[in-house]
Length: 583
Image (cartoon, rainbow, N blue to C red; front, side):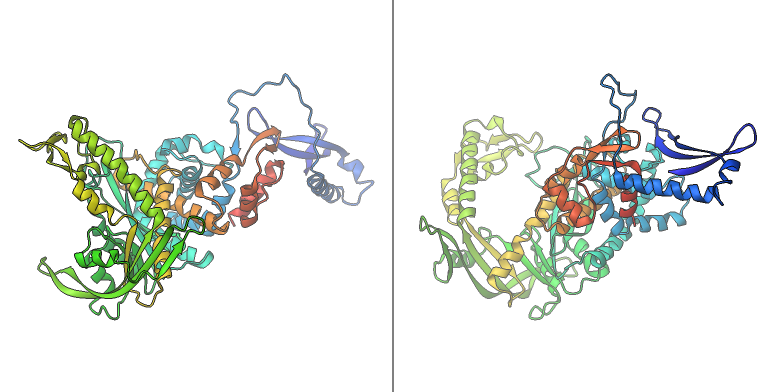
């Protein structure tokens, strides 16, 4: 409410208390008279200062109105929706918006805008892309077309969005380092352990280029060019840094670039890197520990292939002696888990300056071997599927090619793959057959896993638990590909591709922090679903009505200081809440 002082046609000043509201049809801001007060010259006979007095009255009316929160609404059952009604607006984005501003992304982008002349607000564009990526993932055009879902003023064009992508590409690495500093400052960050993994994302294009390549990974059945992403995360699963690589680059070849950047510019100190067996090479181990393996500069916890190991390792794994820690099912008396460990000296191949590999380095490792009934059953089920597929391949090879025969082909003798067509065919003059000896040999090692580490003093349970933390990064990749729909990728310019992944990285980081701040009690999918449901529609003038509340919305509200329990909010209060999350 506010006091209006207007001059009438007769020259006399007239006082009235007015209220602002938004027209439901035109969406324009309007005012209506709440109380007529009279002419100023008459009111001066009753009040010493009528203007000051009634300004205070208007302020008190506003306060009382907010306190009462009661509005009488006349409902006409035959009332029709105005043309071009915009429908529901999302309010759940207040949570990721708060994290966005706590990370200082707005400050960073605004500081960069000062140095360059833009006709648009890059921070507003990043907000739209990041919030849309979390809640309504899709193309940049889809994000732009859906901008009216939010209570934000997005004053830019679709062309401006694509122009901003080039700018985001230029500042990507610097922004990642800035955000990491804010994560440490605001939420805490433990980089004593760093998880590393690689995944690929495909593109809807028919021909590869110097970045988007056909992958060498035989599991990639989709015949689309891909780009590789190497991602490093901290001990709690919070993303630290990512880099993009050509789709045909081997996982092990991405390791030193990403981990090197983390070590050099992120102020981590000594780190223990946890990664899968695809990363474990002599060069990567040497890169971490340095030339004195007895006093490693940095450490590692890597999975190690039992089936691909030496005969001596296989013998050690299968020997029952030494498995001191065992878990037995109380009801069935079946063995569920067993483990043992040893310290060994192992030679590794290291690339010389000349480019030649040589066994010139040895490492002192702790090897932890364990057997799990769960992994054993999983391996047997998967092999049974592969054997059935192999038998079908033998009976009808024309139905298969290089991609579709993956896995099963390993159990088939005399199988050739046509280099031009990729079709599976019997070798010339030979008959396809199942190699049952190989199957029996592999079955010996079902359920067994080996982990190698430079950390001799770390307990066996801690080593296994540390390695199991790698599932966080695997889940992270699933989140980017499912919840955030980071693929397929429709932008084509390389700077736009990197900017696309930067917005995905920011969205992912925000989601992970939301999970952390809510005690990791909810999956990313559950959080996103709830945030999407926290939406409202205009019920009357400036009043919006909400229809969703659950335990997750209460938890989110409690964690981030936002009350999502109100059934109705006026527009002024919604904007006040959104203003507070940006502070």
